[in-house]
Amino acid sequence: MGNDREKDNFIKALGMVRLRGEEPAWKRLEFIDRHEELDITNPTSLLREIDRLRLEKSEIAAQLEKAQTLLHTHIEMEKEKEIIHNAELNKLQLQLKSANNRIEELVKLADFRARTYKDNMIKTGLNFKPYDDGASEFSDITESEISTNENTLDCLVSSCELDELVLRKLLSGKVMDLDGLQTMVALDFYNHDTQNSEVTEGLKPNYNFQVAYKVNVDEELINYMENEFLRAEIYAVIGSDLHLIGTCYASYRELLIKNYDAQFGTSAVVNLNCIVYGERKSDIIGVLKVKLRMRHPISDALHWIKERSEFMRENQDTLESRMDPTLKSRKLIVQVDKVSGLDKRAASFVYYKLYNLRDNCTPTVPGQEPVFNYISTHDLLQNEAVKKYLEKEYLEFVVFDDTAPLRRTDGRSTTAALEGMVGRGR
Image (cartoon, rainbow, N blue to C red; front, side, top):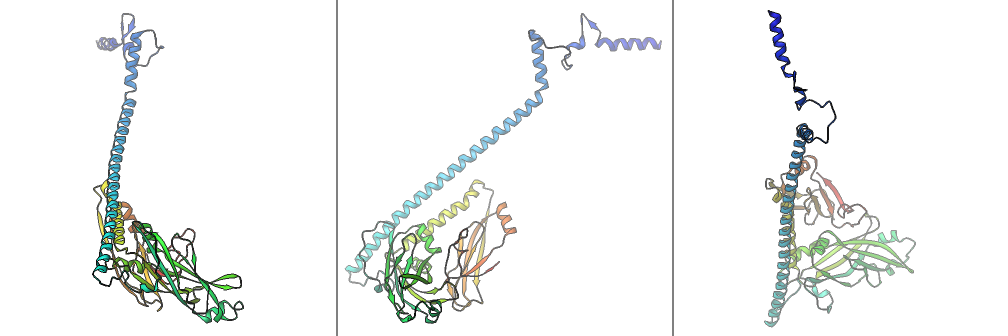
C-alpha cells in the first residue's frame, strides 16, 4: 500500500517533465541555458533570445543608466555654478568700471577746484602757498602741459657731509688729499634712467642737483613708493675712473603720508637726512640731504587709490563667501605696541603678513624704544584652509631699520632682501 502511494507521488512529480507532444515542457522555460545554437532565421527564437538578454543584462543597464543620470546632473550643476561665477565676475567688472569712471570724474573735478581755488586766492590778493614748506630751494621749472593723472616728482640733492676718517681708510693709497676729493651723485627712481650730478670737490660737497621725474599717479606708482626707495650712489672720481664709495636709500613713505593729510590744493615737501653706507654696513660714509615733493597736489588721488584698493580687496575676499553663502567671516585684530632694545640711531618699522591678505607695515618711528601703537583689522573666512593655516602657521613680525639699504636678490621679495632687518618675533 505504501509502495503504491510513493509511485503516485513520483508520477505527479514527473508531471513537470513528462512529454506533451514531441518536446518536453522544460525546454520552454526561459531561465535554462540553450543547449542548441540560436536559429537566426526563426523570428520567434530571436524574440525569445532578445527577452532573455534583456533580463540578463538589466542590472548592468540599470547601473549604466544611474551613472549616466548622475553624470548629467553633475554637468548641469557645474554649468549652473559657472553661470553664477560669470555673473558675479561681470558684476564686479561693471562695479570696477563704474568706480574707475567715477575716479576719473572726481580727479577732473578736484583739478578744476584746485585751479579755481588758486585763481580766487590770487584775485583776492591772499598769499597762495602751493607747497607746505621749503619750496623756495627748488628752482623754477617751466613744464609742458600735463594730462589728467600725470604729475612730476621733484628731487633735490642739496649737500653731503662725508666722514674723513672712514674715507681715509676706504681710499687708502688712492687719494692723497681728501680736501680735494672729487665726487658725484647718481639717482635711480622707478622706471626712469639714472641721473647724475656734476662733479664737486671737498668733504662737504654742495651738489645742488635737482631732477624732475614725470610720472602717472596710479596704483602701480603708489605701491612702488610705499615699498621701494630712492637710491642714491656717491662716486669718487679718481683719475679717469669712478669708484663707488657709498649708497643711501631715501624712503617715500613720509612724502605719501604728508600728502595724504595735506591741506586742499597744497603739495607736501619732505626733508630727508639719508645715511650713506659703504660696501659694508658698518662703514658709515656720511649723510646726504635730500628734498622731495610732488609738483602738483596728489591728496585726492591718494584717497581714491586707497578706496579703490580697499574696494577691490573687499570684493576679492567676499567672492568666495558669495559663491557659498554658508561661509562666514570673523575679524582678527592685530596690535603692534612697541619694540625695545634697538640702536639709538635706528628709525624702525614692523612688517607682518597674515595668511594671503595684504602686507602690513607700521609707520617708521625713530629711537631706541619706538612706540607704534599700530592696530589693523583683518577679515578671515571661516573655511578649512584658514583653519589649517591658523593651526600650523605662526604670525611672524619682522623689525626693520628704515635707514638701511635695500637690495633685490633672486628669488626673494623686496622686504626679505632688506639688509636692515633687525630681528623677527612670533
